[in-house]
Length: 130
Image (cartoon, rainbow, N blue to C red; front, side):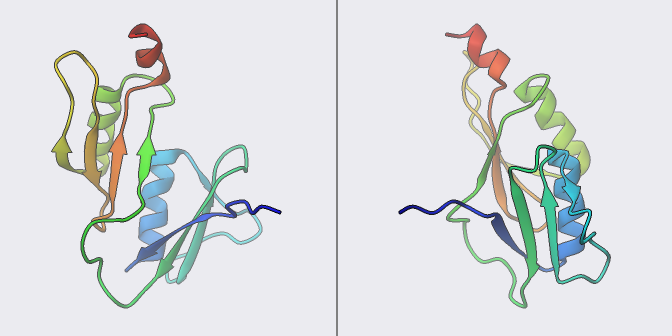
């Protein structure tokens, strides 16, 4: 017997605002049967194919310390560096730039509530360096 991951849950101080921000980053949408609205304490977003869900839940305490689990993002189109620029324009804050001169590496960011996530090279960039 095994289990599967139903969804990934992210603690938030403002579930609605954080869900909206991540929708822009990931291209996800609300659950059509339970759309997110301002003031909701739980906000679910769903990938276009319906296979991945992220649930944002409001908690009273602020984030403390480094995340033990985080998202590693790979651009669906374009390059890692173009995606980094797009995310900065959306309000992501660079935390650690681990890009290497040979084109490898990644960048660590904080989302608007301080949750860490990484941006990796695109699949196309990986293919070009193999």
